[in-house]
Image 1 (tube, one colour):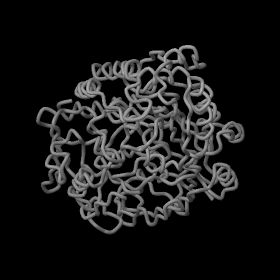
Image 2 (cartoon, one colour):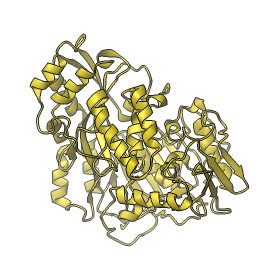
Image 3 (cartoon, rainbow, N blue to C red):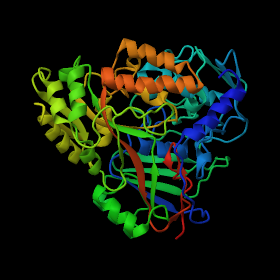
Length: 533
């Protein structure tokens, strides 16, 4: 895309591709009160440069101020980028490589009273680029000139103008810059690789306090002057209640939103009791893929495509999905989810039942010492899936040793280069509706760093790395065709994953909660929720 007009067209295309909410809010907004939220396990970070769990991004949507953002509300418009701190869409020049954003002056302030200027956005890029931070966001700015050093030479400030220069034209740049990673931060925010617990923020809310693994408190930003909703006076997260306890607490009104979900076996009951999308129980499809990542850098799966194919043949996708309960999603054997541009159904591996004979034939002579270490979450359906995986893989001569962790710990361990696991049971929801976010971000080996990796397969194939780059330079139908071909070719030839499902988002709210709003990117809009009691 080589001009501002075409950049906006791409944003409109994103709207058509995103799976947007279809529900309607069920009462008029009321302000004030405390919205209570239950999380079974903690978010990974409350620092925008490091936060990368879906529950954390709900929080970041409420606290961050970005150049461009997704509007609050319902339906397809919530997938269309709109200017937020920027006065409008940027001026694009230099054959689509330079973006000039005009940042609004005297627009709003950080929660600590500091003014928001163009320098506050440059600070976000510079902080992410600092190698000490090991930010997962670096993969999303690797095409910016000078992105490997901090400050970033390709991001400049002049008055209220922020200019970003890329090494090549990138059709998805505007969608990337709208991610929470690139929200405004105070220019003096410390570069701490462990993350800042309570960073000042310029959105509707700020993190007033956080006690890891216990609680997070968001309070309304007293200096916020924007138009986004900020209905509750404060939002209090309670961390650590079991799914069963959370389900009971929502029904009793002790908490208002089960952000970590409810017991998988209870979703059918909730749907029957409250109806679907009628006020308390909401179901929306996600642009997501759940998968088993093979650690291709070590152990039995290294340089072992035959065994990786065998696992794809032997896993019971029907049983794995069933553990997540009613309306959990649909089975999958591909990297890209349906609804993503470029997706084509290639029918690669069994979706209905395992093909044990084919799996045994592929595995014969390729099982090494037969030992496999599986990293899995310790909550919800995850331990049940681990048992199924253990049984499935035993049928091809593999002995699975399962390690269970709190979700944030699991992510941290899997993201550390050299961690001794062989399979990671993972899922990925779209950061934005472009296949780059699944193919390049999750599987380009050139983005692997010491920690905070997203490429849990540690897949680094020069041939496919090159093809990923070539696809990223394309636009329009050619781009999506290239990514669709890559999806199929990688799963046929290299097999970094065993994809298993595409998910639905199932959300339970208390009866006193109203004003439901849903973002195709951030899911529940907690800033828009209101209390009717």
